[in-house]
Image 1 (cartoon, one colour):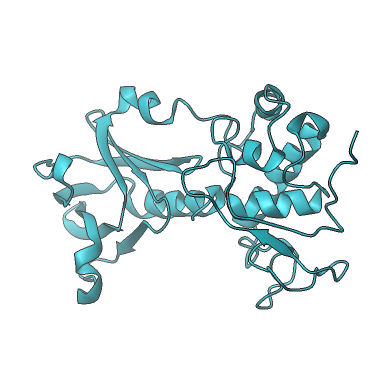
Image 2 (cartoon, rainbow, N blue to C red; image 1 turned 45 degrees about the horizontal axis):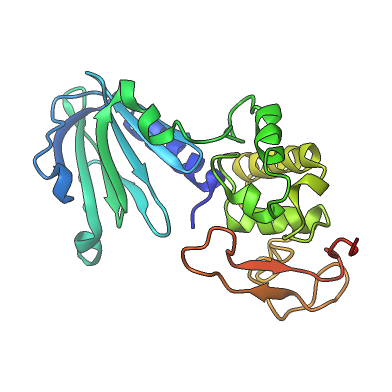
Amino acid sequence: MPEGDSVLKVARTLDARLRGAVVRRSDFRVPQHATADLSGLAVLGTEARGKHLLTRFAGGTTLHTHLRMDGEWTVLAPGKQLPRRVVPDVRILLSTTVGEAPGPTAAALRMPVVELLPTAQEHSVVGHLGPDLLDPHPHVDGAVARLAAQPDRGIAAALLDQRNLAGLGNLWVNELCFLRGLDPWRPAGSVDLRRAVELAVRMLRHSVDTPRAHQVTTGDTRPGRQHWVSGRAGQPCLRCGTTIQVVAEVPGDAERRRTWWCPRCQPPLPAS
């Protein structure tokens, strides 16, 4: 699943390629917006909010998209077309002009969330989110306070809850718990939450801003060595050699996502 750092990279691409262009033709291939027409509207820009994308148009309209598991945005240079094999996956096509010349075309593929709404109503789709860890000045105090409000909740589940803080997905939470030496089910109230949130901010920012470091948490870009625990079930821990463990996700249960951990580097709290 794309996480906050991946979504921010998508937002930057859309913003750089489309800002200032004018929609020549829009094609929404989703039932609720099949008749929508954005032609003639200038693209004001795109920004990320957690894992959500908000593309704004002149006249007060916002296109809200969410990639979830496998949604994708791609931007084609003028005159280029999508490969025929992906045409059935198209959910949105935005053809543009730049001045008098043809502009880029943006295509949303397999996009599970597509909504058009008044820009003034964006809070209806992102207002529930906690502080965005990739904001230029993230509200760390606010994130810590939200996490601390449920002290008995497992730390991994609490960090994944976008109402507490926005941008962390399963990869980052598993890696963060490893780096802080936290058993993923340890109660949030027993954790130094400020240090955990501050580390999460540094990790996400490094992933976004450092070339070739996207979602590499070990500093080693070789295949199979980019992550400490995520996706490494049954393999030796890169730090201590203990076999990495995993528990499967329970569909529909937000407290039981797929979780990887090292039993030695992330020991449970002693029984009281």
